[in-house]
Image (cartoon, rainbow, N blue to C red; front, side):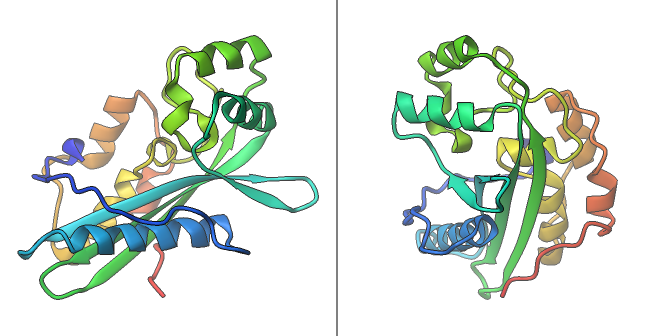
Length: 213
């Protein structure tokens, strides 16, 4: 958020994060982002724009079945997740929900990135998990972790995998006449060290936004 030059305060929403029966990855993050923004807005007693987001990892198997990978509950579960993702491509979904506390208007957006994981070793997994970094990460990894660097190549939004796709956020905030103080795509790429191939398509609307249902 600081990369956009916005003035903001942090609120801590209270939501139920367990997936519902039959809920897919996109439905899951959209529901949680909506729940988070509603919970956060209830803590604010003045006008303002509330932004909430939720990110999850969706691991799809060859037979078409898929599993939502949240934050691991234990060392063993983190190891299991990383082994399951190794050498395969999975999807990361981030939903954004923006609510005007003035008039109740709601805007949503959804970003999906294909994430190809490298063939890291069991020893690398153990060392990474022992450091504790995976325990608060969906899918048990941080794409930006310099020591583990689980992803060799990426062709989508890197910031989405980190947890907040900034170009999606900017185009959604425009609906509330809120603009960034910086060129957000340049600021994001400079901060991450990533030459993003999709930012122009997102900002130009060639990658369509998501309409709240």
